Length: 215
Image (tube, rainbow, N blue to C red):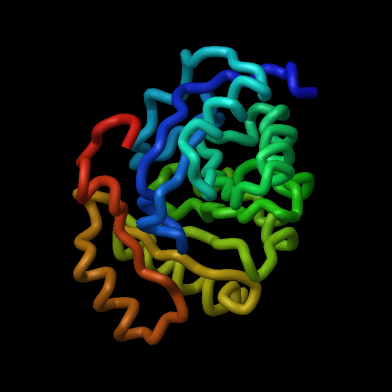
């Protein structure tokens, strides 16, 4: 399976900008393609194009960065079936591997060693109907559910899901404001006011490098 090919938009080395490993030097593997078209998407360049690479070549490039952490992202990485094999090989090499997924595709076959960072799409995303709620059953304490919040409606919807489903008892919960749409201070104040058991996060890489690719 090492000669299996995946279509890759980019492989790069940067600081993790999101999740509970924010700030840690990380190798990123961005797979090409996504079945969703979220209104706030900041990686539309990964919808198409890219180049085909074998899993062996991907692993070799990642190892040149000499870091412990690897994030597999997209697009939607699970849209390519070979992503599952890639992540297993990365874990076999001893990497701490996280998967950034939209939550629209089945995560049940993801290697148990992989940290899943899964979105639940909020109303303003325009893709609320794509949420695959069955995926929640496959999350564990090491995983994370991310709500990207762009409006008061998004906040209320996310809070309701968190409270009613008690998601924080299953895994870590991330609330993240949409850049240039949701005031981050206002979101932080809402979280404090409502005593929500979540991690507030902003996109560190955008503060440091704005919208530069490969960062």
